[in-house]
Length: 262
Length: 305
Image 1 (cartoon, rainbow over the protein chains, first blue to last red):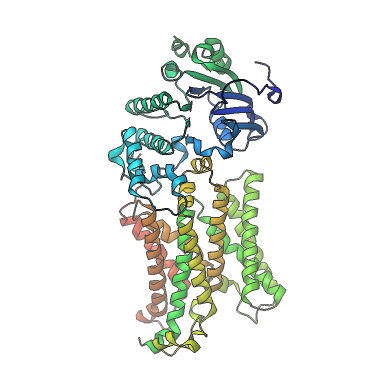
Image 2 (spheres, rainbow over the protein chains, first blue to last red; image 1 turned 180 degrees about the vertical axis):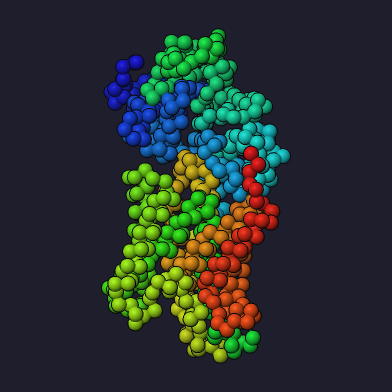
């Protein structure tokens, strides 16, 4: 196991632009033992990072604590070198699909409209330009013709695309996705990765919790390997190595999966 | 029935029943969707010790101390439920069950040990209320609705319940979007900067307000029934939240009117001589509406997956 770096003393004076998202000393605990321990990470602008690690490694927890959904024991988060609370409008979060009740009485259009909450405020009426924007975002994920469907009538992949469309409607520059490819069909996976790659090409920053090691190299340019502690962080070429993966997954990594390293 | 009989004897209880039903059904929509429907049940039970304590302190059945006592008890119960849930790591339903049965039982004991025989404060009243007694003696007919002298004699419960209902409706309308978003997807709501904790507590607070006002007028049976039955039945009628809330108001109104009429005249039609409790009948009708919606509602069945 790697020694723990003391987060507080880490130099903060690196030259160059501040990263869109930077995490220092993040520690989260649900009870006695920490589920995320002293994680430092920085996500450079225009990068696309996969957060990988075994089940129970704290990947989703790290995201939730970073975005303020969970209260960490310690840790600081800066977004473009400023506190998270000033910068929330620049972040689009796509939760795990299974985290919401899809039987909720609402339509696809309404869910994507939630992405415009900031603009609509409490009482501003929804105008045709808002509706048009929602339809444009749905078209980008190939779901325009489903706008009036009740969300419970969609397949898992379609639900995931609706969530991505809602994130697109937010016009953010940092996209944080929790397992966007979990339980989706192949067509949806293709559609989602195409959208994410377009976002990256536009200079936006993408971070996703990811499970399928075989697609890491194709989909992402950076990885953060996690198993409660940070195991490695860097470009796919530097960090996505057999040594690091063995350190994170231990014996749980099948030889077949290692073959994917290429 | 003539106006001279209907207006003084039936109009005000009917209106109070309708306002109580709507005031509880409106927040009930969100409570049911948040799987918190039992909180209405909890609140309507826990207000009993608060009301009894207020009576002990003031020695009289006066409205405001009792409302404050009820509100205090409701607040205490919400805090206790949260504390038990977090410290004991118990699921919320169980925590509510423990708190509301304990506090209600405490209220019943307190009531038994104090001399409340001279006033109309007893367990039956707490459960059923006494809707039939909220009559408007100053009224002489429909014309009294325009007569300021007669209007001054309106039962205060009517004004209070109407204002509460209006306040609840205003809260739901004003915070419609945050309520909807945080109910559907709390994590997303938090990330866009919504104060989801505050929204949740406000919803429970507004529900408590409705429950306390309705409890005072019509007893806890209606409160429990109206928090759950009209919204649950409405959910089975539509897949749109706004339409669901509309249906729930319609069902609540229908249950209140039909329940009141059936309680008053149903037994007579069947050849009996007495009438039955309006609150009990309203709650029964709301349960029957739910049963019918469960059997025939167009949106039942939910997600196919």
